[in-house]
Image 1 (cartoon, rainbow, N blue to C red):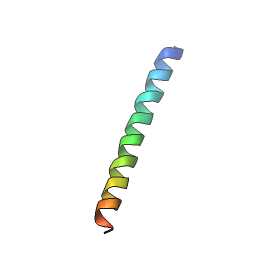
Image 2: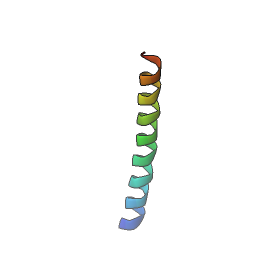
Image 3: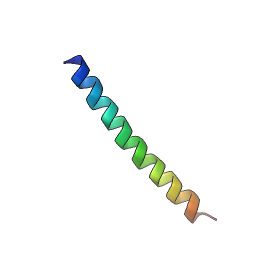
Image 4: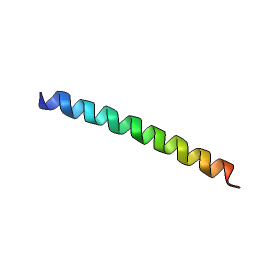
Length: 32
């Protein structure tokens, strides 16, 4: 059970991280 929860948490973190980075890249590229 704990491993499943950890895996789900890692996947969620990865997805959120990807969203955050894509957003950051977009802002940085559009700003100049």
